[in-house]
Length: 180
Ligand code: URA
Image (cartoon, rainbow, N blue to C red):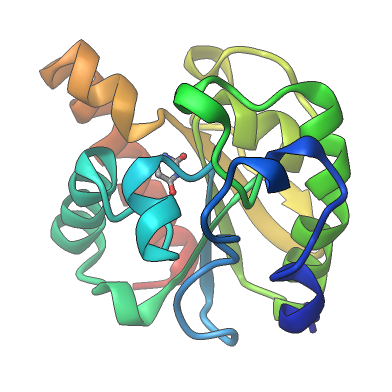
């Protein structure tokens, strides 16, 4: 299991200098679905929980509508556990510094399905730098779990109903993989 006490005081990269909180993840550790995003934003940095801002609210709603799952029924985390200043994408050294925490989560929590929200998560979890538009719909195996990518909800907020439609279709695939 991830050592929460150690992760909460992590200083492996410079993000520890500007963060308020280390956002480790939320949800049951034995959940069958594990969702991975990019990095905490301002709301998450303040609240200590992933995906509670605007894009998080959209993702939470899409998962509830397509999978019938509430936040308390899946685990949700990010590639990088501390907020990058001004919400810039996390750099490669930051992603690498944080990687052991994510790997420990994926390995020890043993989910059935891992959903990567956005290209940063897809790169970290699936090991592919292809765009989400190419990757989505494909099913990978990662630490014994079925793993797949969809768009980051921020892309749906920017890109409108087409992006949201693709995300909903990807969530239907997640539903099938979960046998729901
Ligand atoms: N975007 C992310 O990728 N993760 C969060 O926790 C919030 C916004």
